[in-house]
Amino acid sequence: MDKNQATGLILFAAVILVYSLFFASSPEIPTEETQVPAQTESAERDVPSAMQSTLLSENDSLQSAQSIAKYGELAVLTSGEENQISLENDLIQVTVSSKGALIDEVNLKEFKNWEQQPLLLIDKESSQMDFSIESRVGLISLNDLYYTSDLQTEQDEDGSTIHVLTLSAATESGQITHVFSLKDGTYEVHKSLEIDRYSGYFTGNSIRLTWADQVRAHERDLAESRRKTQVNYYLNTGSYENLGVGDDLEQEQVQEPVKWIGFSQRFFTAGLIASDSFQNVSLAQSTPGDSSIVKFMEASMDIPLKEGTADYTYYFGPDNYKTLKKVTEGFEKNVDMGYFFVSWVNKYIIVNLFAFLEKYFSNYGVIIILIVFIIKLALSPLTYKSYIGMAKMRVIKPEIDELKEKYGDDATKMQQEQMKLFGQLGVSPISGCLPMVLQMPFLFAMFFFFPNAIQLRQESFLWASDLSTYDTFFNLPFTIPFYGSHVSLFTLLMTVSQIVYTHFNNQLTTAQGPMKNLGYIMPVMFMFILNSYPAGLSFYYFVSNMVTFGQQAVIKLFVDDTKIRAKVEESKAKNVNKKKSKFQQKLEEAMKAADSNRKK
Figure (cartoon, rainbow, N blue to C red):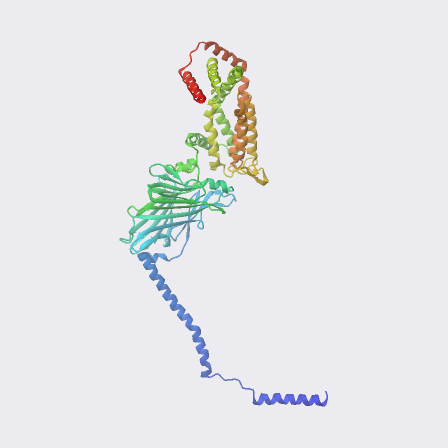
């Protein structure tokens, strides 16, 4: 270090020393003056808390005043703790909330949805019920009240166990009680609502119930579920009605008293059944555009209060015809059994036959095969008569061909001569068709039974995983209009067997032209229709065709065309001089009149 650097360093140190001695301030000792700002700051922090407490107290008072103004004597019941109480038997589990005494959830314990999850017919997010009643302070919603619960088990007169849930809310002026009763082995929940005392407070003589439900999809085929979901209701006069199965908004104000209302899905129903009747009923349903929700349903009604008590029953369960029939009058109509001319087959024969076979067989494919054999055996006399009738028409075909050559240009004369020929030979042109017509109710009855048969739901057979919906043998990379994007093998087998049956049948008849070709067109049309229908239906028709082949093969062994021809010749000899019957005379006169009008 040189002399200049050393001098500079000494001077720099001296400056720092002088500044520290004479100019740097010493630390301040706190005084009262310096402490005041800190106290003020602390007070400023404490003031909002005090104000907040005051505001909260004032807010509680305001809310209390508003509650008293809105609910009057029931205001003290609008606060409390909400609990969930489970009411269940061997079939269903019903969850009830202590707030509002509302049903939050219904689990059908025997069933699963198509994803194999618990089947919740009702849940809190998709289904809401509101109970309200007129009072001197206005319309009161009972949903806002809190109740205390008591769950007991009782014994019925027949020894059955009844689970009873009582929810009560009481003040000095009176008490409101809800009682839910669920008996073992049933899907019915009886509900009783009782208002004790509260003299002069409630001015209404009925409870207004509004139920809105977003029906969730429990089946794989959403389109089929929507087609089978609708609001049904039954009038006290005994008339069954519904809002239809359309996608558009449907609304109806029902003027007459209603016995029951059903939110009916394809395989399940959530219903309300009046002990006497529901009044002023309003119903609505609609289908959402792009949603997993099947349908929106809503029902509003007045439940009469008799001596302060309103009674009604819920039904949460499957659409099993025999089960629904035990619930109340007409409730089985939630299952579509078809038009009146075929419904009797399903109601009195097929349903009971299914129930009988279920006792001995667990495989529903086997049950379907057995039903086909039983029905075919019962109808075999008609099948035999139909075959004989067609055989007679076949053996007289040469005579009919002669008439066609002779009178082919005159249709009226041709028909007259044919009728004359049939009379002489003792042959009826409808003898082969009439027995087939008598079998038609059984054929069409199945068209309604299988799509609604909950017995087939999620039951597998061969390659079909679920007989209640279509069997997908393989998926197409494109969609065919009116057919779909999948191929149902059972439907293909049914179509092929029907075409083969038609070809075989045409060999036994005298059908010509369009009538002969119609038999080939119909199976193809049904292939398009049934491709998205339940596999159980296509399988039934396929087995039915195969059994029919067997029947006709057996009948052919015992029916000789030579013997039939001999009987025809015998009838011809007897009827040579036979006079025309009155029916035949009138028929010929009608034909002549029709021909005359045509020429004019």
